[in-house]
Image 1: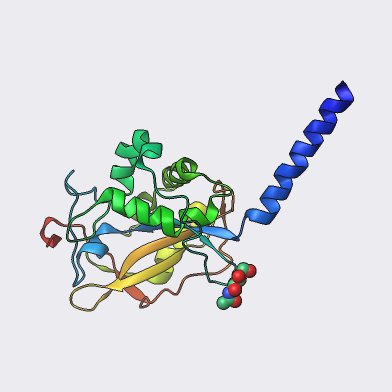
Image 2: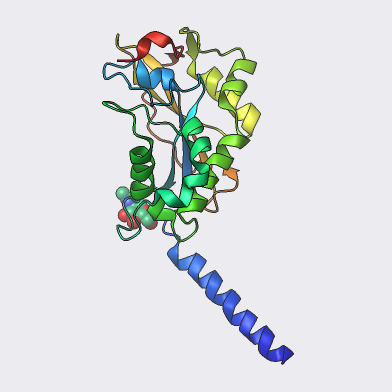
Amino acid sequence: MKAIYSLLIGILVSQHLAAICVSEGFDFFYFVQQWPGSFCDTRTGCCYPQTGKPASDFSIHGLWPNYNNGSYPSNCDYRNPFNPRMISDLRIRLEKTWPSLACPRSEMLRFWSHEWIKHGTCSESILNQRAYFITALNLRNKVNLLQILVNAGIKPDGRLYSLGVIKEAITKATGYTPGIVCNLDRSGSSQLYQIFLCVDTSGSKFIECPVFPRQMCGSSIKFPSFGASTQL
Ligand SMILES: *[C@@H]1O[C@H](CO)[C@@H](O)[C@H](O)[C@H]1NC(C)=O
């Protein structure tokens, strides 16, 4: 009897390992956070959610499977559509930390659905829909970028800061080099828009990035405030 059990367990374990090995289909995750002030002060502007103006804090843009060569898989499984019921109990946390600022009307479910369909389905062999959103929320809890920057004297006050100093502050605090992506404000100044951290395929550990996104930043960049006057 005992031998049969261990044989069965052996088969189950090896099937499980085989499944992990074949079906991953990506090398690591980018965990991407964005600064709402830089989303809103562009020419396109932004629209606040019905729940009101989001906090003046970094929010989640997404958790994106990526390849070591810099390209990424997308839209991996149309048969696994976004199902809001699977995350209904996470909704308040998601509204707070993963808000949509898109116009003409901020639609949270639409944003989350887009992220799941485009990116999340490409890691579905490891994280089902619910686990995918929980993983992103947990990662957000592990690293408080605004606190890290403010501690280093880098504040969202509309002033210019050295890109190198921003990277160094995050590297020192997290142990890993971030990718920084900039965009342009209405007057064409380069500003701190998104911060990329890399995460292993299980979604649980930060790792050194195998490859960085194209940054498009100047050597000093603006860190705009997330003021009241930016909404369209
Ligand atoms: C990058 O790597 C992936 C997975 O190995 C591969 O499918 C894809 O074609 C590669 N893309 C480029 C541009 O080399």
